[in-house]
Length: 526
Image (cartoon, rainbow, N blue to C red; front, side):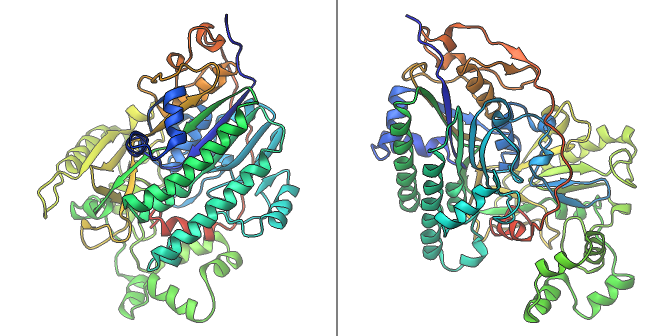
């Protein structure tokens, strides 16, 4: 007898959880609820985006398309004039699951600020500057959260706890508790789609990579999973548990722009004029930040009261090690930005640019050889892996030309430094491509394994499980192998429809200073 499609879908997102840790600890009997998912549902690794980064992967999970279609290549959008701004939900170009399925409840998903006007409730997550305008939909939900979850926080800055790891763990545990309280509150809503993300594991793992500490945290995640499974058992729902990427230890940074400078492909701004005068008297960006801080003035206050164009102009004249403000682009052939995205400074993409578009292919090959041939002078190991942007992002002519990732325990960075290599310091672990995928429900085949699952497959599979059409331009596929043959999702053909682009909205005007501090504390920004 054929079982019907479930009425609801619940997505439990666990940012940065790797497949190898879950597999090991379930095998050792330390995570009973994850073990139950393995026994009763579908389970396997989930391949992330390239680069394997939060701002690319969560929108891909939510849309079913790769970054060249949804439009996000990092936390910041690189602009034609070599400046950048924070990416927001307004920059996601394809409809997300909560735009398709209603009513929907969405909680703490990265890159959802400002909250969209959806049929349901939405509480924004990572990249939210403050718990004010744009934090929730409907807007009055923000006041309720402030009143009933008084210690709710959007995120933590590692810089506050750099020398106090035990205190950081305590604060992170409190953060996890308030997230769980919010999830319980949102569980009271009517929903057909419930999409909630816990980002705490990513935060912890960047800064502490010790088995006993991680296992303690994963036991908390396992308890949350158990609560969700109990909640769903009487609600005719299918559960998806996914992570945006995996994790692993790192020990060395590789500074891509410093390498490009060494090879005369990137030029720092000269010490002439204003910059030279300021440098001679020791006025660098770091020193000026210290001076204004001692006067009781912070960057946030300055940015609030000064036009952005003026801030960019001042930043460009004060010497420092910034990967945009301290580069002379009139003499630069190529540069790196964000999570290892490398751009040829061509005249079609940038203003003014120095490289003819016809010369880009040959230059890309030279850059690939440069990065692939780089070895660590301390170990003689090759440090980098290189990916062609045209192959990763074929539909977008303005995508990165190359994506450069660190191999094994190497992590790429983009600051202008004195040395190409350095120790990773307080950042002890970072992203890996292999996250987790679980599915559980009446239509899911017990002990099944998805084949070569990627983050782009989550949205099509979820839509198909609810008897909904898959976007006709989806890059992912429906993982039909996880549904048992007697279920409607397992038997029926995949249907498609054109959902169009997401509704365009105006650029977001908000103070992202606190967001940038949190990203710097985690090593996401320099």
